[in-house]
Image (tube, rainbow, N blue to C red):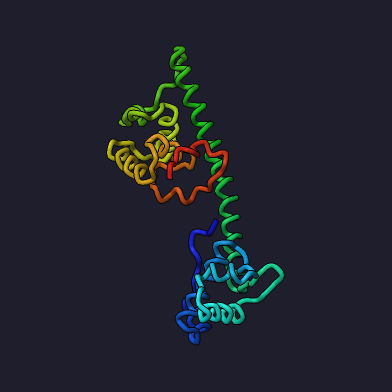
Length: 229
């Protein structure tokens, strides 16, 4: 599986490759893409090398050999490009750090939502049993809950979890807000409930389809499977 994108430093590339022919440029670039996608070297077998760069004629094969000999180092398991392997190692380190940080943040957010949900359930239970509740202050008594009820096909649990996040950030819930989240959910091929659940899990007061890239794909994600890409 390749990384999201391959870094190309155009200044360095042009400086080192001005003498190459168009055919050699093509072979070199395709070999670099292979190393990036595979996170490893170009194979030793020449037939596989030709398949990577689509070299068929004798001239194309010679271009491939010249590029390998000039820009790659042959090792026991393949041909390595020093700069590309440095970039692969750098990307692996960044990806690993983000994944660890994302998992820890997701765990903290889940704990916070679960605690808030437990408090909310306890308050509902107390109200049902007729347990006296503290008299609200004048400032709070003036506040009116203008939040709409749970939209159709959204469970009460997911709706309450998301409302806790929204209220904590002092962000009102309106039909316009819900419509905007519904549109973003549609872009990501998600249901509205799945989008709200992901938002609650990540302490988001809103939802954007592009934000899904920030979330590491973990096996224990409770909403995994809701996305149908």
